[in-house]
Image (cartoon, rainbow, N blue to C red):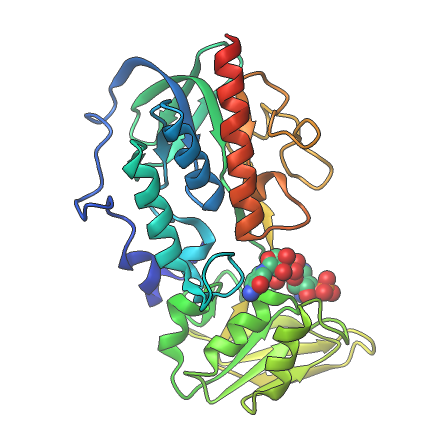
Length: 343
Ligand code: NAP
């Protein structure tokens, strides 16, 4: 999620870190204690996959507990503007509103959503153990992992140092701080174009820096970028370094065909080059694929350990859409239900 906290995270701070009744986040239990109940299912993660798994397991009377994260509940859609392609919303819906709705829908059926972070998982035995960062311990017969993915970094000089000082991964969070400034957005996929288009409402100029000469993004997004007078596309280009003392002052560009370097005067860099599955909690415990996603059995959500299921971007190197994540969360809920019935 956005690592640019000094600029604030306007959207993430805005809404869903409350339960749907608008109360403060539910405290799981006193800090550092052990919940002796062995629950049916614990869901780790709260994007479309996690909340859909919660809706389905709650409706199956499995009383799911959802650990939704304290920093980034709701997942990537919390930092998105309008979602135009989630079926059922003729005129689109704002990402945070969609996630708020999914959370409320899950809670309506009895899902217990906690804005807490999981520190570690013990998955081998029949009773799985989930330990939170505050030391609290929970147990369940099944666990659904829906931890999503995290933004990729460019890995160039200046990126880390100026993160939060002009380098950002979230236009909806930080765009406001770049009124009438020139910016660069790096990437050629749908995310980059969406970020660039959004940023044109603040910035004086938006350069899209893309390493090839064609976009990966969908045609409709590409056309919108071509049509926007504030956007200039720098094809066959990559950022070699981000420069500035305390904030971004310019970037060194490199032509990917000729290697020639040039200077681009900008005050912000938005990195939108995709994301990687978030597997830190399970990478030594569950089998992963060559692409780094959690390996599941065929079209199911079954992982290499019985009773442990995975859903959403953390298993999906290909589609990575909100709707495919939601479908995947549904599958995980049904798989968990069948597993519990078989015990
Ligand atoms: P993506 O489709 O994987 O695109 C990543 C882009 O970043 C590619 O253009 C890639 O270049 C470039 N890139 C990757 N690593 C790079 C590096 N180290 N340096 C420079 N450039 C680099 O990721 P995404 O745009 O985040 O989209 C992910 C998925 O979500 C896609 O399926 C997308 O369709 C979907 N999505 C949909 C919407 C929408 O429908 N409105 C919005 C956002 C995302 P190459 O092209 O050369 O590989």
